[in-house]
Amino acid sequence: MNALLHGAAILPAAERSRMERIGDAVSRFARDDGLRLILIGLGTVIAVRVVRIVLYRIQRRVEKSRLAVLPGETGRLTALFDVLHYLAVAVVVGIGAMSALAVLGVNTGALLASAGVLGFAVGFGAQTMVKDLLNGLFLLAEGQYTIGDEITIAGVTGIVERVTLRTTTLRATNGDVHIVPSGDVRLVTNKSKGWSQVAIDAGIGYTTPVDRALEVLDLYCAEVAADDEIAEHLMEPPKVAGVTAFQDHQYVVRVTAKLRPSTDSKPIERRMRAILRRVFEREGIETPVPVPLMAMLPSETPTGTSPPDKPSPEE
Image 1 (cartoon, one colour):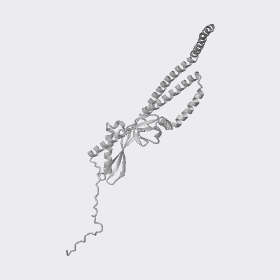
Image 2 (image 1 turned 45 degrees about the vertical axis):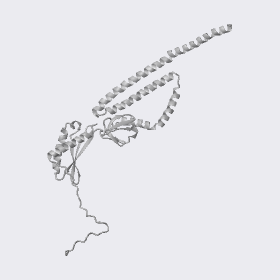
Image 3 (image 1 turned 90 degrees about the horizontal axis):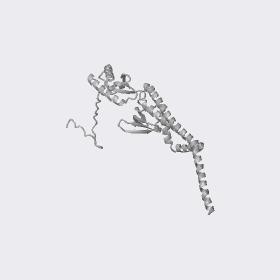
Image 4 (image 1 turned 60 degrees about the vertical axis):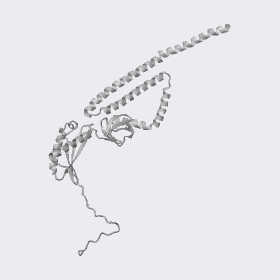
């Protein structure tokens, strides 16, 4: 009985000792490691905030300087700075996480090595995605095209509506939306880079003298330059390039117009053709209409028979 009472007295003392040790450990952690973790967390949050503010100010300054020289760069700069923002935040958060793990006693060297092996395995298994991301980064950095440009990539032509690291979204003239992976972009044909040009070929019959045709087309160029729907999109007045071809029923005179960057050339071209038709009607310039030639073919005779003999004069 005495031994049982003695054991019951010892157990609470051992329990109290263990609780005291746990309390001391928690106190030391809160005093040392806990304070470090709090400081690391606060430092990470502040660093992320500072990075965002700095990148935002840099973006605004770059946009003001670039747009003064190259209008239409807003889309590309926005996409590029979005990428820089995500990368910078990822780096800051990664540094904060590694610092916190080091405070907790985790071997960060071994963790980085394991992450490297895992990253290599994931990269090897997702080569297409990695290729898309890298190619998309170069496309954004080099500024091969931006939002609003009319381009042809991967055999698809359309207006750029959205650009990300992985894909480019195009809207075709018929309204179809094409999403092209960045890794498939080999050759870029940009019809809006810097400026674009519309070429109108006017077919004129040979009955109209060339001098007269050039005079009328000069009037046409003046009307195009003064048109309300076209004037704001022109970098310079349209000009007559001259006679470019001689065909069976007509000769061809070309008129060119240089458009401002990021201008959709299709509506401008349609409007210029409408004005051309109106000027030709007013000035009496007719475009020739080819007349099909009809050949008389000899009548067929049945196989194995000869045509009937001509009647003799006696008959």
